[in-house]
Amino acid sequence: HALAEQQQGERGQREQSRQRRARAGGVLVGFAEHSPPNLAFGPPSSPLESAPMEAAVYREFLELEQTHWWFRGRRAIFISLLDRFVRRDGGNHRVLMDLGCGVGGMLQPLSAYGRVIGTDVTLQGLHYCAERKFPLLVACNGPQGCFLDDSLDCITAFDALEHIEDDALALREIFRMLKPGGILIASGPAYQFLYAQQDRVTHHVRRYTLGDLSGKARAAGFEIVQASYINFWLFPVI
Image (cartoon, rainbow, N blue to C red):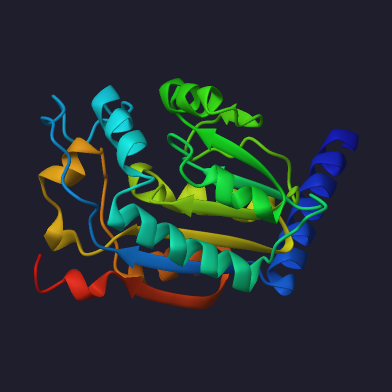
């Protein structure tokens, strides 16, 4: 009986914590976007397997992320959102996590808003981050969060959720790890009918509409404060 009462008490505490976070209002700033530029390498042997992206993908991203207009424009949009919803933190009082940090393209900009932890499911991506001298790196299973409840001020998921088979679970885990009032800024590729070879090469499980992404975020407990498409002016070309 004592064990049952303890387990019931723990469940009650977790539920109270979830309700408290929901009342405080986690925030999703979600974007569904069009594709990055095509990269010059072949498809994986299995299109939707959960294996890491090929080494060529990482090398290509590493070379392009600082110079290509698509990456630079995308980064500028994300920084403007961080300025609006997070604001810069010179004293490093906040803790941020970049989910699916890849080769670390957003880790340096994120460092202006607090201490930033880069997480990725692959050691290969984290190896590139370590070579670039980013100090806080964690190998973490995509859908399963690796931090305590209410421990992070902001989580970013820039083109990450579409790689995760169970993205609904991932969103619930993100919500769990965020402090009350914490912020999620997420992006992903738009429209399943545009799913093509580039998605297979980069191991995308899906593409999103705003309704898809917003609905899953709300189901996880988030309050949506802004959601829109970006790069929509490319749509006629695509």
